[in-house]
Amino acid sequence: MSELWSVLFDPNICFFRYALLTGIFASLPFGIIGTLVVVRRISYIAGAISHCVLGGIGLGLYLEKAVGVSWFGPLQGAVVASLLAAVVLALVSRHARQREDSVIGALWAVGMATGLLFIAKTPGYVDPMSYLFGNILLVSKSDFIFVLILDVVVLGLVGVFYHKFLAICFDEEFSRLRGLRTGWLYLLLLCLTALTIVLLVRVVGIVMVIALLTLPAAVAGNFSSNILQMMLLAVLFCAGFVVAGLGVSFTLDLPSGPIIIVIAAMVYLLILVGGKVAKVFKK
Image (cartoon, rainbow, N blue to C red; front, side, top):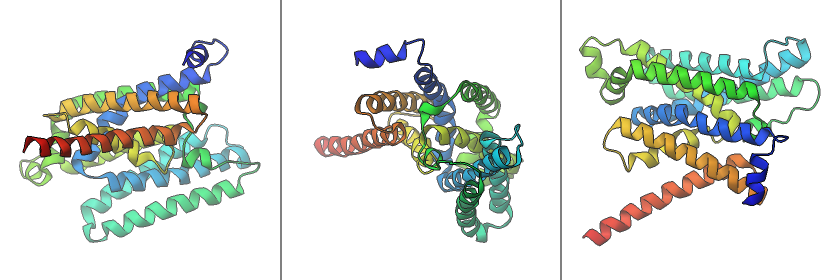
């Protein structure tokens, strides 16, 4: 533990501080958007968006290293791919419900395949593992700034449309009958989910995005009486999982992303088991 604190405050080691700060501040969009994803039950759509991100990352790497487009890198590619996937899925959800599962599965697979093909054609060695399973220790100052910008965007938009988001999450059909424009609100929710997923990829990777997007909210739901409480607790739980995961991964010299997910899953399992045991004893 003393070694961890010495590394954290060492002026010559910036990457660990960036990782810790990024994880803490990223917990805001993770907890807030994750709560809406869990309540709206669109985690499968979020999964499709997350796998499309690899296509954008691969395109960004190829354009940056093979073509020489310096202003378009993996981050820009991930943002474009995720937003495009969100728009496609929103349109499919509205206008082609009978084919929604097929389109989700197609986007899921094609996004991964396209990304791997672009990575294969990118000059030099590119390790896809850091994108598939994440490495929060690789975050930079620009990544941290992106987190802060996303915090402002998410807090601002969710604050403005909070009640409307709740309406489409709980009873979208009734909201539509009352004159609420649910179509563009649903699209906005998916776009916010897409931007949050881009950030999640850096923390835990594409494969484990859904876990960190949903587990903190699922844990928080056991202690909440309303959505606002669930959001706040989800943010706190997410920050706790990230900080604990970083500490354990540093101490045991293990990958940070999988450790964060394992800790979150263990807490969720303990709460579920504890709840069942408590009900038995009450009887």
